[in-house]
Amino acid sequence: MALIQFTYVSNVLLRSVPVQVILPVDKLSPEGEYLPLKKYKTLYLLNGLWGSHVDWVSGTRIQRWAEERDLAVVMPAGENSFYVDRPGFHTDYGKWIGEELVTITRRMFPLSDKREDTFIGGLSMGGFGAMRNGLRYADTFGQIVSLSPALHLFEGDGVQVCGLLGKSPADWEDIRNSDVNPRWLAENFKGEKPGIYLACGREDDLFPFSQLFHEVLTRAGFEHHYVADEGKHDWDYWDHHIRLALNWLPLDERVGGLNSGNIKGE
Image (tube, rainbow, N blue to C red; front, side):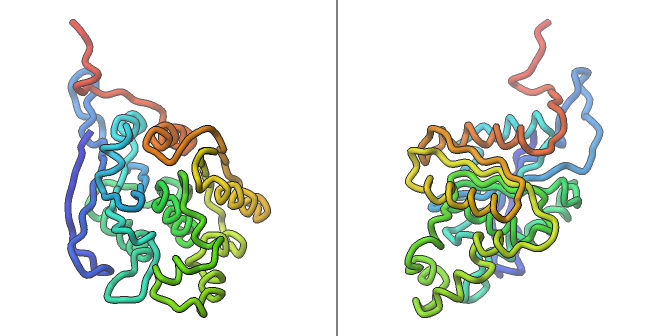
């Protein structure tokens, strides 16, 4: 499994941005030959608040499981942005995730350009970003994985969201009824609906908001897999559920390859 870290100049953010990619191009057959190259199904995987592009690899076993399923995983740095467009000098993080990052990584790597092969996921802040951008850019992403998402943002008095977007509290109702809000997007969705995997532990303070969003999705007619189980807001939970989410995604059958953890004895 190739683990690649690179930076590129983002036209949307107008600076160099770091990205980490898991890419199964170096998988060897039992005979020691590289397996045929193909266009890989891809998961754009978003980190949580205070995190970075290396979080998923250091906190979970995503690299091993992606290799098993021939899945490419693209992990950008969210920079505490909640992955939404914000007023300011080149701070359109939603457009960056939903448009530019997909385009540039498809230029760089052998990634499928099919909607049914392109997925978005994340945890906490990244779970919010995955839900918002997965719904906003549903013509690009066929499936959404949202773990312990910070969906509470739009269920309070709006102070936090208005501050995040540099808006006045007087703008709150306009913001709530816009495509920044995942709930508004779900309730006003038009077109082909993406599949959704939504999971949150019952011991997580964010659990009531996942339960509420599950009800929103149900009323809006989304086919989704909702998990409300034991768990906290921690890496043990996300490590467990990212594997379950990969099993839920329409991925290839498991194909082993030679590596340091899979070498046949003489």
